[in-house]
Amino acid sequence: MKKRLSPTILGILLCLFSVHKTNAQDTHFVLPAWIEHASFYQIYPQSFQDSNGDGIGDIQGIINRLDYIRSIGCNTVWLNPCFHSAFMDAGYDVIDFYRVAPRYGTNDDLRTLFKEAHERGMKVVLDLVAGHSSDQSPWFTYSQQKQTNPYSDRYIWTNDSTVRPDRFVSGKFERNGTYRKNYFDCQPAFNYGYGEPNPSHPWEEPVTAPGPTATRQELIHIMDYWMQMGCDGFRVDLAGSLVKNDPHLVGTTYLWHEIRTHFQSLYPEGILLAEWSNPQKAIQVGFMMDFIICFGNTGYSQMMFNEVGTYRRDTCYFDLKGVGNPDPFISYLNDCIRVIGDKGHICIPTSNHDFQRPNSGRRNSMEQLKTTMTFFLTLPGVPLIYYGDEIGMKYIDGLPNKEGSLLSKGNRAGSRTPMQWDASTGAGFSTASPEHFYLPVDSSANRPNVAQQENDPHSLLNYTRR
Image (tube, rainbow, N blue to C red):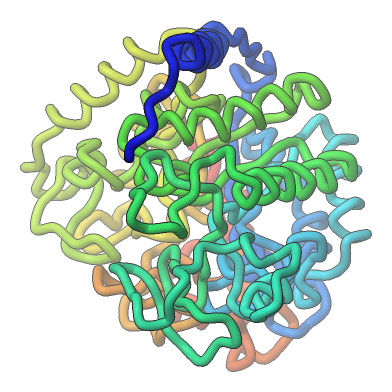
């Protein structure tokens, strides 16, 4: 026999839901004023500056270059992941969220970076891989155990090893089940719950269940740890994907409104930046800023991507042929500005670690690159320069797969090569022999470098500064 809720109980539940929904809609979030005047500089830490001669960039190297970054006009640094990692996906597979990866230095080094940046009036934003860990994380090891423990529900597991829905991974585990991956198999997804759980799938828990609640609290604890050390906020990887099967963003809003409320209470000057490429949704659920990049129907690809790089196209607008269509991008940008209003900010980066640089294929002359830099730095929103774009570093084709850089859409390694500081063999990146570099440096005889452009008033570097 099916049991029915009494009218009284049903009325109470509807009332509670209405109050929760109203509170979520009526929450008044205040934006830190500094974001309005921020200019971001993204650093891929393993490729920026090596200070100890091992061929891999590190935190001390970044500290040594803070004055250079400031000289460009950038006052906020965003670091790609620097936590202890298995590096199967270049740091986006974290083993320990509370520890800096040894190849970059120590927690004290990161604390020093915060301090040195603040003394220069600059801020530092960390990359937070919130949706998953490495499969080598102790948390995931504990979650595989048959006996129930605090990590049993940290990840999404089926209750039957013979059941393997789409995006689930099987293996020889002590517990009876398969786990949900986030992207690669080595990235088990954290359990933040499901927006619309399927009753026939007992592993699909609501966001308010004990497992997702504990995961949410751990995420807040990670944020607290670094914010109290001096961090100025986070760029959240795959920000819209944490809560699964959430078409109406009810669970996602619940998650990020809780975190935004926490931030507003304890860190009113801290920033929450989404990697979503949908500012309308990102700001709605509680973020302060989001990128417009190539993910989704943003029009960014038609503007910037040509025949070379990770996401290849035959034509684009900012190219020697100039036959791309700018209308989709302009329309999308205008819609975002109209919907967001004064509730948040938009950021359109010059490029990033996942797709090609402006200097790609036919678009390779300094005059062309000045045109694209003008486009990026005069758009509405917060500017962001990916390291090396200010001197016109080139996307390097044909590199080997490095730490998961190769995707079906192309090789991301071409946008991750060592920063070119001078004309020496190692480009001023490291004192190590170039064959020991994290990635090969651009081998072009005329590769651009900072030292040469510093002394040229007509260089791209000095044009960017103006």
